[in-house]
Image 1: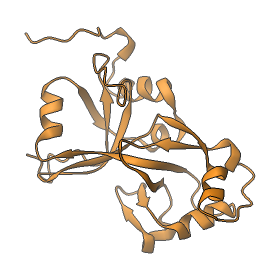
Image 2: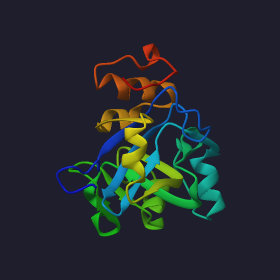
Image 3: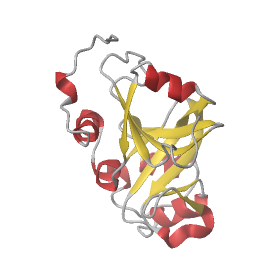
Image 4: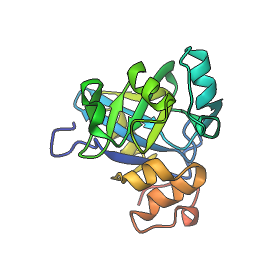
Length: 188
């Protein structure tokens, strides 16, 4: 079970090459919560086909952010796929955000989205729809089954890497080239 000392909060889960679940294959998940009750996180390297400006239009937030049409909304996971969340690096909106680490925060506030729509707010954001979650003991079992590697998250990879680059860069934090790991797994 996860206690404070063993919590994987603020860690990346890195999918092992043999993890063939189409939702999680070559994924990197940022864990926002991990306790003896379970875990919750967001896939950070699965862009959806929805761009941020389209999300603003859909939820009727007027926007003047000239970059919004270049920022993909991420598929955060298979749970609550219509629930939007924002991972960000600025503590300016602490009233509506939860601190995950000293420099990473989580919000579901439409006020924060309005701020972003007006080209203000945090310097770095990830907007996701949906999340990934595990029941008590489930994530620990998946780690024992060699489905995931874990490593302390970095804001650089969280906010500035995507797709397979994020997968490879997160694994390199462990000193490994994940592309050299066999798709076959076993036990010694």
